[in-house]
Amino acid sequence: MKRVTGIGGIFFKAKDAPALQAWYKRHLGVDVQEWGGTAFPWADGEGKPVAGSTVWSIGSAQSDQFAPSTAPFMVNYRVEDLHGLVNVLREEGCNVLEKIDDSEYGKFAWVIDPEGNKVELWQPPLGQ
Image (cartoon, one colour):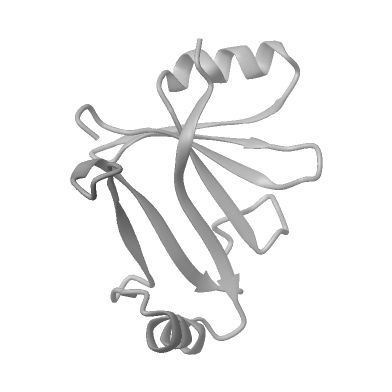
């Protein structure tokens, strides 16, 4: 079974999220949207769009989105078989959180790495 197939997103916290979002927009040209981030569409070697994107987002330092981790970031990894991978990780003794979300955006599960960082696993909907 394939495990991680790519990075679906990078999320991090900031002391002053709106100011940092504005800095990235102004100085690096990141198209920061109202929700605090952007989605970078994927392209092939010739620049033609392909299915998929990588989300980049800045949130408030006060958010508990990454709990139980205290790290100021979280990486979202794409996977092909979320339930299969979660089962294997549990069998291997990994700290997999109980909650699994299934929504229009795909399936999500979380595991805590040995350093205490929350890692998001994402199985995109078909076609993405």
